[in-house]
Image 1 (cartoon, rainbow, N blue to C red):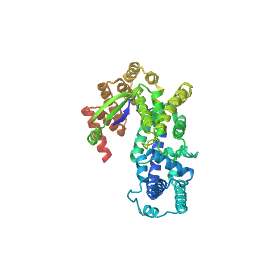
Image 2 (cartoon, rainbow, N blue to C red):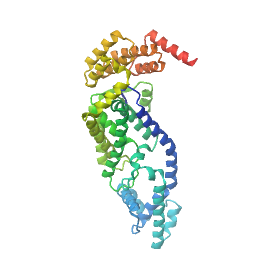
Image 3 (cartoon, helix red, strand yellow):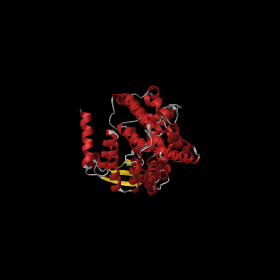
Image 4 (spheres, rainbow, N blue to C red):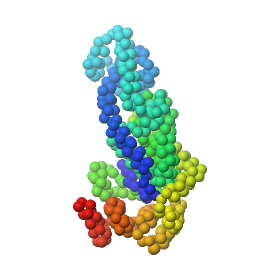
Length: 424
């Protein structure tokens, strides 16, 4: 398994408050709904199972359209189980199954099916999934938004939020706090609609932010195709432990081949497995394509430039011409020229945190590990001098993650003093 850890554009001009807000909202919704959804699923699990058994044993019984679609879909996806359910010699499933086998009156059997169908409909309408998840067969307008904030489990949530942070924070910094959330909500709706087009008539609820997050990935590819992403290879529990300790197998890959590879895998999975895998692969593909096209429009329509200029006016470090010029050069991939501008600036202002932060990113992009680590040390010193202890310790963590061994004695001593002062 490959896990993206970070990319070379991690640092932005200001705090990504919209991305952080989206993550907090997703977490809050998950904590408020997950256990209730589990309880509802457990409580209502017998109804679908009984419908399937009754339909398998008595295919002549009539069913409402939604129940018929549910039964037909299950029969197509699980033919072996369906064949076993039709067998008269199979083992009893429960007491209800034993009672039904004793009924020979077709009218009584039809009444049982009608009762189960009524419970099935009520279950869908009263449950969180029925009200707020997206169902392609009968989508409700509100579910184009709410489905993006529901998640099936911790891994589902954590995975989506991590990718949201990696791709979303830099896009928010690029587009601003108005364009970015509009794009995010539109992307989530577009991904769900694409899923509906690829699964017409499906009554299976769809939930999760993965469609919107896939759109962020598509936009990231369009805007930052050459950006290098650090990837960790996880083969098991041991390698996952090594990763937590800052060790393990890592490599860097440019976005222009890593992200297309991911979407090709989604297309392949969607083509082979469809909805049988339990993953909305086509929602991912639709979101990715939407993000790619929308980012193209936003950039070349001039909207992005206007937003970026407005952000520049609100952040202090762009007041220095050399840093502003370096930022423009960095945007156009002219790494060496940007390094020269920042070096010139640092000759007169060696403690400039903004310049050293950008210089650190440039060395990372260039793949110059030694210079990158040296710049982290200097940035750590600058943060310590500015009394920003939290940032200084973060710099130290970055130094370790990049393979650095020991800080200069003076820098390490200053960090220890700051921690001691905080403890007192």
